[in-house]
Image (cartoon, rainbow, N blue to C red):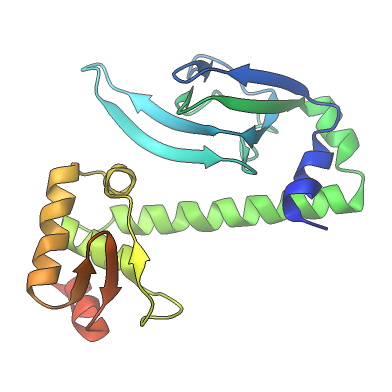
Length: 203
């Protein structure tokens, strides 16, 4: 069965919430009591500092589940969940979630999502552990299944993930291109010298 429909079946008795772009779904002042599912659209989880600046934490797109790591503990949301575009969200209260998880297919889908999320969180922590933007970029680009394939980068989204400005990221990418470590053709990139890219991690 398609993974999207497996997840959607888990939320068959959930509450449907429609959000306009910019609408706030949850804030750090709220206790988490439900599991969320993005049926369509996109959400962004951010932490807003006293200065008004936002620190990007995570994006959630169609088919993603959110709050699966805190729904059982009842912790507060780690940031502001805001609609990046018109979105349809389904939320399932904890009591109903427990009932639904008694179904084997639902439990498997849920555990798979948690495993994927923990893996992504681990990689994000590893990226942020590097000191320079250049090292963070290199770690993000490695490894790739097929180094000969071109790939595209959303510079704005990647800058948020790496915790730097878009301009700083663009400079780091341009430097890698000038050193012939990666190549760029319009909006497409390709790794040219993997060994040199790996060496950056130890600079």
